[in-house]
Length: 202
Image (cartoon, rainbow, N blue to C red; front, side, top):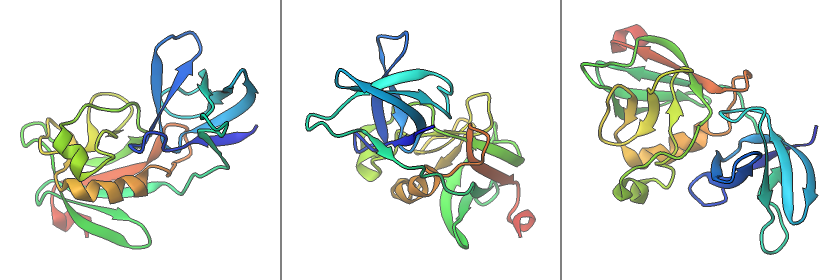
């Protein structure tokens, strides 16, 4: 196996590739790990070994100067640990100590469930207002909470039941912390522990 990983090709955390059997380009997230197979006719071929397109084969053209959009090496870091408290609308993440609090919220009538949930490798870019992008170039990258449904860890001003980081400029630091981390199940970057009250976290 020759592991490579997706570079930040568009400066927003995504790389457009062609998956086998499809004519439409698909976006792969930064640091997604692939098994490189060969280069042919100016395109690099690979098999995706994690994330939403696990097991699919694809290819990407070389850059105009002949260099690759796929970086060498295996960049994965230890699993992410995130805490979110519904009551006080605060979020923390663990990186040699707890970093936070960061302003975040969920919908009061459709709260993200209390407990420990996996956080998935990003699936695809999500549409966001342009002013979000001006505050964080990674605002399109959302991380699904658990392995089904439509609850995500993301940034923005509105929550329909997700964990929404409302301090949008802080999203860039959180993105950089999360994006290369892996839990070891080919799907997840780590876990989020949701608490109802701050007293339950300490």
